[in-house]
Length: 324
Ligand code: NDP
Ligand code: OXD
Image (cartoon, rainbow, N blue to C red; front, side):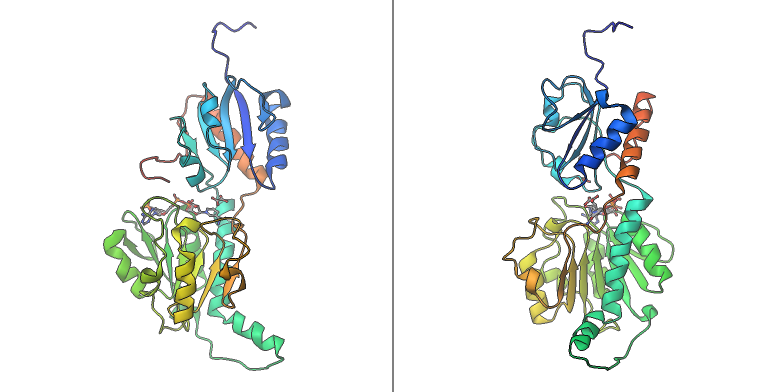
């Protein structure tokens, strides 16, 4: 069949993804759409005028602008801050990763570290190294207050699991929410009350101009330290730019924080000379709290492309004005 229009059909898919999964994404896309339709950066060639869809993760800025017939961008993760920082980003819809699999994985990370703090595991690890057999008083989860910053897809999922474990859970979001069993707060006006009774603070916020540097010393000093958790703790599995690394160290050193588990950092990879690597009360992980299963992610891309081709609205699009 000959094409009537002089504009190319623009249904090819561009993949530009940094990281360990890039090869797997490419083979899953080829298996799903056929090798002819998939072009993988940096070997995608030019021009990119047949590209209708771009699947991007930490892709070079300026690349989507080189696709004149782009219909949608698929951000191959939940946080789209890297993409939104592209000064030449075209005005097409941006779809981000939202799936129960991703929420569950981040929730595993959150539950792991809430329980590590709650059960005093770092202390028992130290005792084991010294062959010390000594039990410490252990409060029940129902005595401990966990506060979640960010009550979106992942935050609400984590809140439900922590509730099921018995913790007292509060949440804080930008706009008002109703979440069964969760004590909810919102906006700048609701922040101090939320912090005042939070002992274990879990950050699941995106990086936006409004959240940048929010987890600073002044905020960490407002956490409750004299509760059943035995001190205030911070878990950040949201975005690194929300935290101020030097302030976390200062909070640990002055006693505002008893411990921290950090998956994300303002600079990634975390520089080798960062004192966070060696701090005795900090756990560092390499931004892997929640990597959605590649098979599920590519199936989601395919589902949304099918919606687009049927003229249906795309789901889970980024609101550029909000920044997430
Ligand atoms: P959502 O967009 O569903 O939720 C974001 C939440 O943050 C919403 O509740 C939103 O409030 C709240 N929020 C945003 N800005 C503010 C603000 N200025 N003040 C108060 N609350 C605010 O995102 P997800 O739950 O899907 O993901 C959250 C983040 O987790 C992602 O943006 C990503 O950065 C990070 N992430 C990290 C992973 C990792 O491996 N470490 C894996 C996956 C995600 P409201 O509800 O009012 O809009
Ligand atoms: C992220 C992700 O946004 O892995 O960090 O989805």
